[in-house]
Image (tube, rainbow, N blue to C red):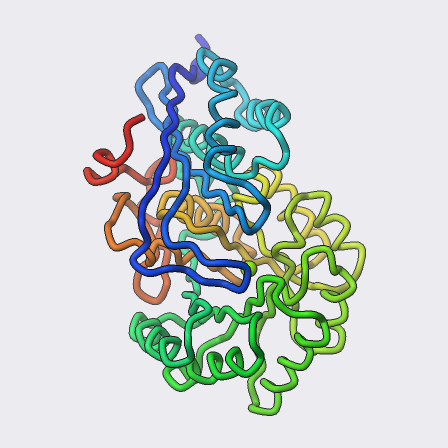
Length: 368
Ligand SMILES: [Mg+2]
């Protein structure tokens, strides 16, 4: 007798949750989530959860567009038997608009959560089973140097080894922010992220300023505009620091194009850019080309961030892990693994699926 799961119900709900403090970067600031949650139910009662966290400043995606793209797939999904989850998700993905990355991520997450719960394996095992834990960095956003110092003190007390610092506005202020962080965390490994805020010349000037202070960042994310591929190349070639494409690396096609050249040598994978299935293709290509891998996200609750931790653990070759936004929520929304001391995501105790269950507070907030 066949024992394939059948999708019996798909529910979606908006999640508007304030952050405990705003998250300013050079392209804008966010002070609450505008996310969409998905819950799928299988015929045998197994459930799976997914989250879409669109970023309007990143690519024009939004909560309304995410909600709409998901609602359009409900009648296709309900009643479907899933024999081969990979083939099923590819078919589903081909039905959805490519630019609805958050919606694609959310429904794929929910189906994979339900599928791996049904199969009684953790998602990380399904994705490769290379590791059981990863360490995330923690971010200092685009705040004043004095506030940056206090933020870095908190991060150092958490025992976190890698600090990501947002830059990309004013060179003097950006330099002061980096110096302020290093006062509290002198041994931290540094990632700097300009979120497209510089020209190549300004980015190289900034690196020169840091070099004069004896500071060499481990990674420089997206110094220039997303379409400025020459700029990305030049900053790495002349700056002597690994450059990571983030906003420029928004799809498999974009990444294929980026990888035609030796620089940038790193790419930031985010599930919200183009979903889980397409990101597996990107990660496979990066591995083949010997590129440095980073995993990050938008402003996501622990559900989507822990999914990315499963992705990074399963594959095992991520040099930079940037999954810290659960720290921006004052209330815990999910029971399950999330960022802990030293930035650790410990997935060793997850028996099946993502290992996440909604907390009573989330059940009150969200009505599927
Ligand atoms: Mg970035």
